Length: 312
Ligand SMILES: C[S@@+](CC[C@H](N)C(=O)[O-])C[C@H]1O[C@@H](n2cnc3c(N)ncnc32)[C@H](O)[C@@H]1O
Image (cartoon, rainbow, N blue to C red; front, side):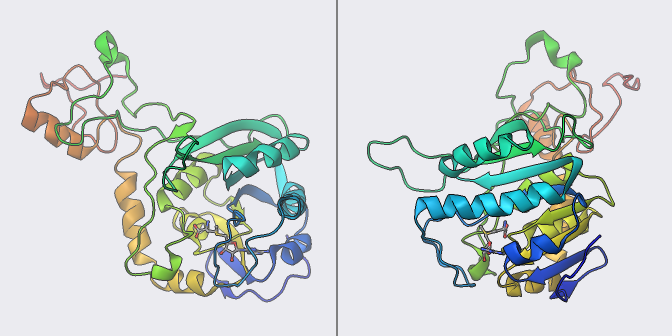
């Protein structure tokens, strides 16, 4: 799969992590060896990275740099493979147009996270752009998670009115849309250094689950604190990682249990119509759930109130 690669900084059962510039490592990978790419580059906002890279360069230089690694990523992607690019809308607009000449556009996913204070005379920026492309016409792998019905966190009542359609709803949950409103910002007290740039493991769990299978190869050229690699490792995918300064990633793998516990927790709040917590609240506040068919992994029962099994 690979040619003259440097010695990895770290290896696990499933992954290899290379310390260095992705632009010198990527050319060492053979073409079309990767099923899923997730890239979350620096946004050229003048942030300080532990690697001391320059995150404030002229716009033209930033876009040229992005296009260089995008070209390499397109080359290493297998036909049918998926490419996710996470960035500010400002950068994903030109980069999306560039990638659209080489790959097939699938979605502009709005990841609803507020990331600055309101800016005078502008709309309040409240989403990151997650571009989703595939190589060729059809995705080789596509199985998006389903989400629970949105309910009031205090009483468990539905936030939308499903009227007479309750019994028609998929017991595994609501279809995933291209607006992801449930991704929490990451706030660490334990790993202060990671705080500024780390993405939520919930986001990477969703992307990795959607566009890869156990045994697939996942690549992220901008490791940061290693969220993509942690998701890949825990979901039994192979992975290839690169980062200028790998120390946070190595630390994180040494303490992977917390991430494993978190992943186990979030797996109980997806692919189900109601979470255990919303069912508990609904019972407490007297909201009728009997019209829904319940069979998801967070649901308490797959029998109807009259004791008959639910048939699908
Ligand atoms: C926005 S952060 C990625 C955060 C990551 N997604 C996470 O959840 O932890 C971008 C990372 O890219 C790294 N980086 C910047 N230029 C790089 C390059 N040329 N090659 C490899 N990594 C680079 C930076 O050191 C930084 O850690």
